[in-house]
Image (cartoon, protein in one colour):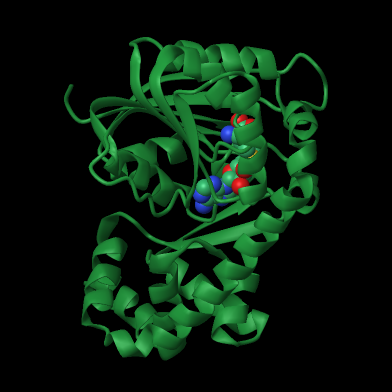
Length: 311
Ligand SMILES: C[S@@+](CC[C@H](N)C(=O)[O-])C[C@H]1O[C@@H](n2cnc3c(N)ncnc32)[C@H](O)[C@@H]1O
């Protein structure tokens, strides 16, 4: 009873309700929330604290950034779902528009980074990770069975398409950056890879009609996204039963400069978070491989695998 009353009290304030409804839509930092709701930092932080104490929000600190999101399990999640269903859609419309604006600004900043660095990407790519070992581990994870139809989500300059094409009957590389795709097209043409193609598109909104993929890869893509779990769920939606999803990304790290200089949003991912995306997308988790870097200054890469439905 006390717990429920505390939750209702926390949610029973117009600004806190707005924050809660926003945080059901996206994982956001305090500064992003301030921009959307237009209140001062101390006020927003105080509201977030109350919502967090009542179990309606989750907070996690990563380097110098703190992210908030609506609780996705337990009584807090149940209550926020009920409140969202009861809320008049018109009530949150202005906030949703401002949220879209904030996300648009962020996406534009990342797009500008990739546009400016498309030609340099091969060099940058090698800066962070033990590339050869990572590529070998991805090939091993993805080619346990012959690949019929591969999707390389966030293909960038198409390196992984080139690496995996010999093992796939068909392959598609998808990316939101036309500049990256121009390089990927050249790469595939020079390598004589004719059964792989690239498409402009958004990993959050895949538009493959009736085409099922039996292998999907996210290689060094998810740490740029503000809702990686949504991209994983979208990938799961276009996979056939028994299809394999492979995520290659960084283990949690503290290299804050990657945010400023390389447009990263997240500083790696913990196994638990990735397992949460898999569970939410109805994917069965598989083996996890850790590749540590012998050279100093390089990051540890993890390769997470999951399987869609029943084979
Ligand atoms: C690190 S880069 C390329 C990684 C590439 N997989 C590789 O192996 O080199 C990340 C790529 O993700 C793309 N990207 C970012 N957000 C995206 C989205 N929402 N949908 C599709 N691609 C996206 C960027 O344009 C960029 O080319």
